Structure formats: C-alpha cells, structure tokens
Amino acid sequence: MAKSKIKKEKVDNVGIHSFSKKADLFFSSIVGLIALSCILPFIFVVMISLTDEQSLAIHGFQFWPAKFGADGYLFLVQFKDKILQALFITLFVTIVGTACNVFITTTYAYAISRRTFKYRNFFTVFALLSMLFSAGMVPGYIVTTQLLHLGDTVGALIIPMLLSPFNIILMRTFFKRTIPEAILESARIDGASETRIFFQICLPLSLPGIATISLFTALGFWNDWFNALLYIKSENLYPLQYLLMQIQIIWITFLNQSVHLVKSLVRSNPFLRKLDGWPWWWWQQFQSLSSIHSSNVTL
Image 1 (cartoon, helix red, strand yellow):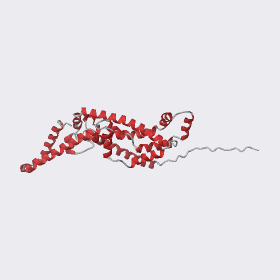
Image 2: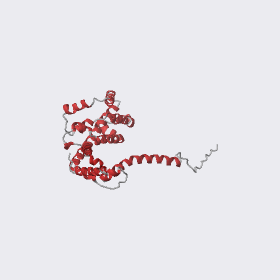
Image 3: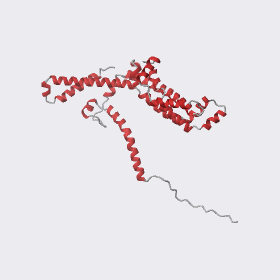
C-alpha cells in the first residue's frame, strides 16, 4: 500500500485575539486617569506643605503656590526631638508587631487548613465569630490594663493587634488552594515533622500570601493612633500618628481662640467696625499673632 502523504500547510499569519487600537487607547486612558487620581492628592499635599503661610491664607490651596515657603517644616522642627522619638516608637511597633502578627496568623491558618487537624472546624468558626462580633472597647480596655497590666507600655500598642481574623481566613484559603495535601503526605512519609513541613515546605510556597497580609498588618500598625489614645500617658511612648494628631489639636485650638479674640475686640469697639479696610488689617494682625505663637507653642 502506498503511504499517504500529509501535506503541511504553510502558515503565513498567526491570528492573535486582542483589542483594537481604539479599544487599547480607551482602556489605557481609563487606567491612566485612575493612576493620576491616586497620585494627584499626594502631589497636592506636598505642594501645600511648600506654600508660604500668608500666601496660603490669601490665595487658598493651589497646585502651584504663588509663593513658596517652609513655614510648616520650620514649625515641625521645633518638635524634632519628640518627632524622632515618636518615629522610633512607630518603627519599633510596626516591625515587631508585623513579625509577630504574621507568625501567629500563619500558624493558626495552617492548622485549620489541614484535614488531619481534629478541631479545625471549631477554630475556624471561632475566628469567624471573633471577626463578626467584638466584645467592645470597655472589656478590651479592662483586659489590657487590669488583667495584662499593659497600660502605658509599648506592649499596649502591639498586643491588641497581634491577631487578625480576616488575615487568618485569607491565609487559610491560600493554604488550601495553593499547597496540595499530596506534597505534605510525601513529606510525612519521608519522616518530616509538622514543624519542618510548615517552615521548609509551606512557608516558601506561601510567600505571596504572606507578603499580602504583611502589607495589611504593617499599614495597620503604622497608622494606628487609637491604642495610644486609650493606653499611653507618657509622651516618650507616643507613636508618630498620635503625636501629629496632638500637634494638630493644639494648633486648631489656638486658631479658634485667636479668632474669638479678634471678634471680641471688633465687637467691643464701634470705631473698628467703621474703619475702612479693617477686615484686611485685622487679618494681618491675626497672621502676625499666629507666627508669634507658632514659635512658642509647646506640647
């Protein structure tokens, strides 16, 4: 029998399914606008910080200041010792708290993700219930200050945030979807202990999930000021966010008192109400009073 020959067709053009150029331009423009909306607020804050104080009062907020100045930074220089101390506390709490939180979260999530763990359902429901229902602020304050005796210590900034039920459920799902049970069974047959399986097999395979919860946790510790408001009394233990809030409260209080002072002076003197151009003159006096106070204000 004659062998049938198979003719190969020459492929000149390979069709690739893709958007048209107009669709690419449209979607690229949308993504560019979203990215610009995320960057512009940060640029706006930076430009405001570089605006002269009087120019800011006259012209308001602008992307390009009418007159540049470093009044805000000079004001913060007065608190450089307190700010550096608060920055050290914040960095310490963020690094130590993130490391401890990630370790406890991953071990908890690994245990409830394994079918061989007898009580996995109970601890999974326990984590879900703690995520949905909270004991409240008062019981938490009593446990932290009376039971654990962590009032006015660095531990009060770390321990209340050591465990996140949301991150536990996230890592549990990641372990179940990413790490097959067959790999763990093979390791057990080879004589590996659960500790070795967790540290040498599970953790290296779970780096994307660990990086995700580490980012969430680090942002939570860095931006936290509420625990300092509840538990911290010593100024040398203030985190950075709480210290900046204290500075803002002092400044706003001063501005409100200054405005009431100017209003009371104007209302008490009929001549000032009839004086031509008195609003601008009193605003200049208010600015000079603000500059004098900003050089003397202390926490």
